[in-house]
Length: 365
Image 1: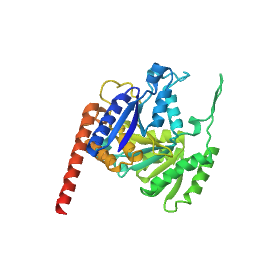
Image 2: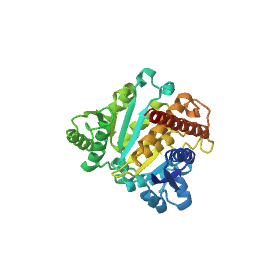
Image 3: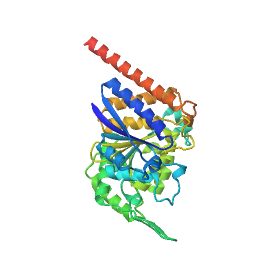
Image 4: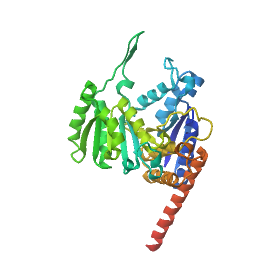
């Protein structure tokens, strides 16, 4: 397969973890006979410094022409003034809207070897395997905004079509998992949530094999900490999803471990670790690259249809999390490059083992 991938390293530790993910993609391409080409573009604070805007037109055009987009992180203290007219996050929001990636997928699993890093007791972390599906291009983040000297408004608006497409994606994904969907809203207070709930209820009728439950967002925030293993696919709107997924990330022990995929109607997607730019450790070579590397696995699976290759990366990461080396955020002292190299070595071992197995099968046949 030939694929063209745009990389947006961004700010802070973004370039460091993105480089690790690219190295893993290049190794996978070499092992499995693919050709991946990479085009690095600007986004975020570095783009503001270089061009005056957080998403240059050249970067946007490159992303729209790519098979997939791999993002690092945006933002940092240099551009943190909330009253600034141009901010790094504007580039990310504009990119999501332009690519039409309305469904943000955030898988959450708790690795047994890292369970002690979680603030929850170990017994609550057994069998935690949740897939969050967050609506990404609507709601308060994209609604009309006003500001006067003493008032401000942020419009939260959803259409039936916006709700339906992300909810159908959640139900379809549940059919490949444990056939359970939890829809999160605030239907006891918000009119947008009432629209959300009625739409979800109607769509559920088309999926009789999937069990649906509704939760209010405030109670869901509690339940994620008290019974996280009870959930399979969780679907919710933009603002609620942003908050709940960061809360849930604490269960895994570190934000640095978790990937995400943002998908639209086609195969092109936007892939990024869920952590921020971590300016306090930028340039030190100690950032955890696992979230970015697992995002590369999601890229292979969802945009390129390469399930075997995606699984090879995930298996390699599983081995590194089990046996080390570990980065500083999860109790170790390994550098970004050391973790990257361990994953690359584990991929080599995985591919060699698989090749030996199939060679033996052919010999027996």
